Image 1 (cartoon, rainbow, N blue to C red):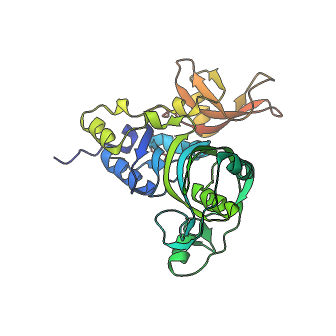
Image 2: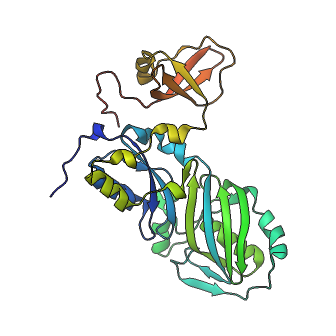
Image 3: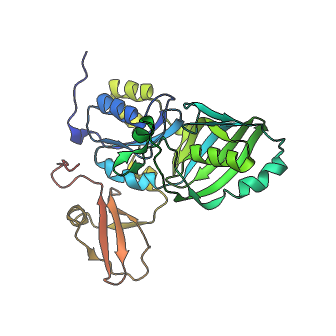
Length: 313
């Protein structure tokens, strides 16, 4: 029986999807759109087809949170093969060079790993979605061109050895937005003088989205068919729990919806994005305190406007 299409305003929330290997992030979004019957779906942080694990997906009005969630720290389980470089820096590419793997111990590996911890400059993989002169790098690479990619600043918060069994190396990586673990594997191989590529990648977390709580596309489909979407849809509070919060009168919903500032009445308000709740406990959106003007400036509206209409994408 064909699934009844819901109105786009009917479904709002966050999904902690466990992406399977072989799917692109856009594949996941397409499946969620069909399953929930809504066009307003977006993912927060691309995963390569080779990768598995946490892919936050925003639905309905919560697509406004995509960028904020994507900015959060990410954690990965990464398996690396030493001694071979590939065209894509992972197991999906062709091997272009093999070298002998030096004798390694954890103690010998530690000073090399230390060079990659903290703020670093990283060149993205040649086969990546980075744009060069308006074209995707992977499109240029597939045509046989060699796109020149500029190094970008990223931060590796944690880089630990989970297992060393040459030529296999397993790592735990915690990093900032924009980090390519494929590039990290490639550069680590170069630092060791033997080359390397990524063979498996599992994203363990994105901010508060954790792998142990992630659900499969089949589970989301089952929840939709049984009318139990609340079992898999998460509220915005889950993604924003680390932000400070204030409580305001219910009529501030109109101000937030129109981007109108309102007097703060305080000097020592929290800095940066702040959750705004009404007196009934409903999350209205995000605002930032402007100390110079003494006002709260709305940044993001998350509650439905008066009357229940919510057709703003």
